[in-house]
Length: 191
Image 1 (cartoon, rainbow, N blue to C red):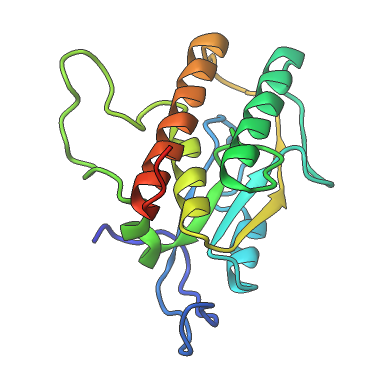
Image 2 (image 1 turned 90 degrees about the horizontal axis):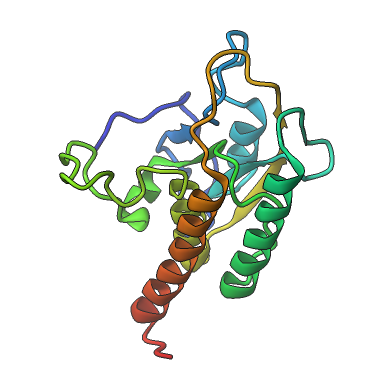
């Protein structure tokens, strides 16, 4: 198992009667801010309070963004609607990358090994902006407890975004549909 990221946390696990002893895993947004903390204390607090998966949201009360355009905000809202309809969730920000989860949930995510070489034609599935979507869908399909935490996205201080609004939005939409089919197959539902 990969080395866990985060502090040693223990809390009651909703699926067991013993204290949770695995460590949280976190992912952070791809912004460059030299003073940004390595971990968002809100997502860690949500885990300690009983969440299996905590995700930052720029659109939850108390969250915000200094960097999102109207086009990206609209696209995110549309993708949220699709995800919420397909997975029965109430996400307010599907595409924000500040997430945390317990290390013992890695098998539920069923991600490929991190040391796989990239194929000649480009990225591995999940190496792009759709990784947040994969995580969100698989956690929801597993019926785990999800907590959204208000997060603030500041202006990028260095570099340019790698986001390609239409191409990456299409990739996220394809991911939502593929993950819904995957969830149906795993649950025995066929459409």
